[in-house]
Figure 1 (tube, rainbow, N blue to C red):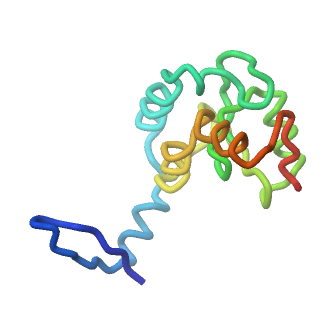
Figure 2 (figure 1 turned 180 degrees about the vertical axis):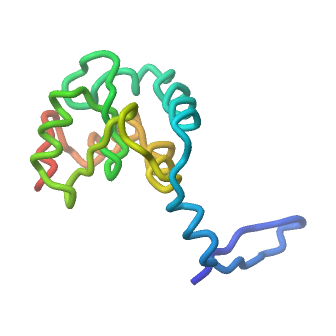
Length: 128
């Protein structure tokens, strides 16, 4: 497998996905790097409250959905099971580069936009 991107002078390049790319995405990042990334992501007002209930200062996340959650709502997400929502602590758990990328590409604002665009209202039934 590979992916394409446009380079200098609009010349199309193709880059192969290598095993080293996969290993890099699975590598655990340091706690310091994790904390710095989450500090930056939570500086966005929409990420500094729980997606499900709006409590301030969430410390948990749904990795698969890219959501910032409070402790109580994280418990609900854990009950859903990992096939619907994989929940982790932003401060207690180890994170891989892959999981951090989900959070960087996601976020509460993007999730809100997606759910509104598709006619879903809170509280959201993640299993349906």
